Image 1 (tube, one colour):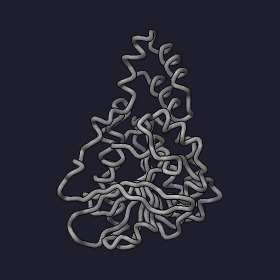
Image 2 (image 1 turned 180 degrees about the horizontal axis):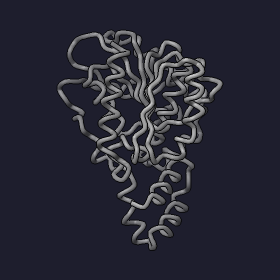
Image 3 (image 1 turned 180 degrees about the vertical axis):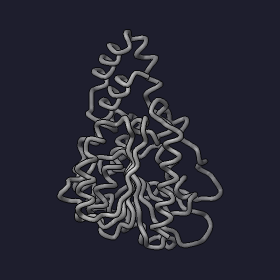
Length: 285
């Protein structure tokens, strides 16, 4: 697909553009309204493909839970191994579409690897993630970021109350959630491991606060996010932070999301996920 179309969709999902402006510009790129409408299914996520691990898989247990935050409560999805034991705790952080079937599936994937995994819904203070993705995206503009970081940090307090959690914590986030993973590394001193998939970087001045080991995954075609890598790497090296950085050449932003047909890159996604699980196995056991 024409890279200009993919870049336009990235602008639509992140800037954000109105849907009307996005369709107008997509029509110009494709040549006609009919062609633009035919292209849409190749760009937009399809949650019919979200479930790679069945929600009733008998190796894990899942539940919708809430935990208290200042001024209210956070909704979250939790998955854990059914087999009794002590497991590392992992927070999964969604993209800027909220807690959806794809992220619930990612949560189950991590649970199958032997972790207690919770995926909070950032939009909980606004009533939770709505079915309408455009509405969800717009709701993100209403979030107070310091409060949202605190709300996610409280997920670790919730994990501490779980009898099957060993008290070692990590997080993994994607896109908006990748930026949040970086922010949690700055703001949660007892975090052992933070993994950011194509996430924006924190301020260089905050990097010395990071105590966690980091694993950073970037897409070669993701110019918007990649622009922040040099300053982040320089700050990480200067602060002596333990980090790994992987660049997936030819991959698009959101390459791990198997419900995004044009941007999903199976080879890169599987490699990045295997690296993530190996990292958690090293840091959280």
